[in-house]
Amino acid sequence: MMNMRPASRFGWSCLLVLAAILFPASSAFAEPNEALPWAMLGGFLIFLLIFLVALYVYTALAIQTIAQKTNTENPWLAWIPIVNMLLLVMIAKKPFWWFFLFLIPLVNVVMMVIVWMAVAEARGKPSWWGIMTLVPVVNLIVPGYLAWSD
Image 1 (cartoon, rainbow, N blue to C red):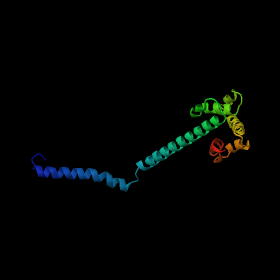
Image 2 (cartoon, rainbow, N blue to C red; image 1 turned 90 degrees about the vertical axis):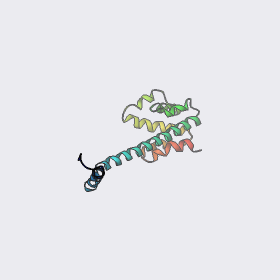
Image 3 (cartoon, rainbow, N blue to C red; image 1 turned 90 degrees about the horizontal axis):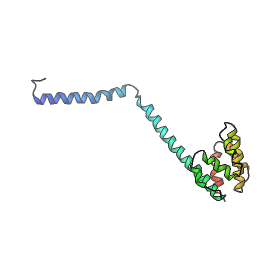
Image 4 (cartoon, rainbow, N blue to C red; image 1 turned 180 degrees about the horizontal axis):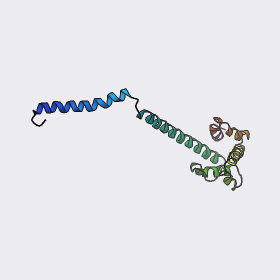
């Protein structure tokens, strides 16, 4: 290749570059692309992250609004994870130590229903709204209803 003319070296170089570009593209169409499932997983995880952040913001705003409407001290505690359960206990006017019951598995489900029932009563709503927190889709509506209804 050393004693070739510059024009023919350029031609061979272009041919090699073209082959390098087209070879992976042709093999990508011949066999399944392994990157596609990972791209789909990444897209799903981004969607899930955005959904969970939106859900957290909605819940924190609802608890903060409930705390403001019931004249509970420190409504900003609604934005701190785990501590917002303490704020719910304060809104429900239950003893402080009830907060520790939220840390026990299975007991926390019962305590959550009882506390949300007391929060509903503090807002002047029927206590059965606290029981509705056990229903999968309705539990997303309950905090908003208790916060922004008249």
